[in-house]
Length: 148
Image: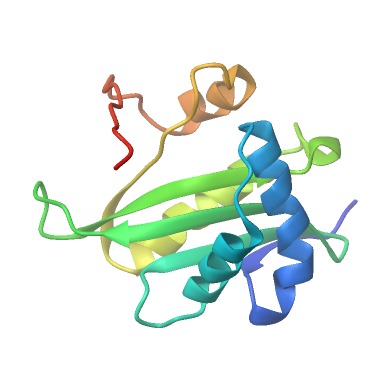
């Protein structure tokens, strides 16, 4: 039985995190510059930034990541937590690691005083949506955006 641990990333985890982050980008056909990724990494460890990075580690090797961001809401007094990025290495999928990462975010967000956790996924990400449909509600909102 594998040893599985979900934990906050540490500053020493960059070399383990970055290939997973690139795998996530590849899945969504994105190519984020290394300079941007390094700033993102630094923000995870800046106490003035409400950004978090957690890893799922299997037998000592990082196999997945989740990024989340706390933010204010006009709908509640409490903060909300936006689960921005979730990725599990392809060879490790369908073993419950994604669910563990999401449940970890739920627990951490609750401990930080958040009222809810929410996220988006692409409509073609049907495998992940099977999990999401079991552990969260789909409110039916459609995203619009304009890059400025």
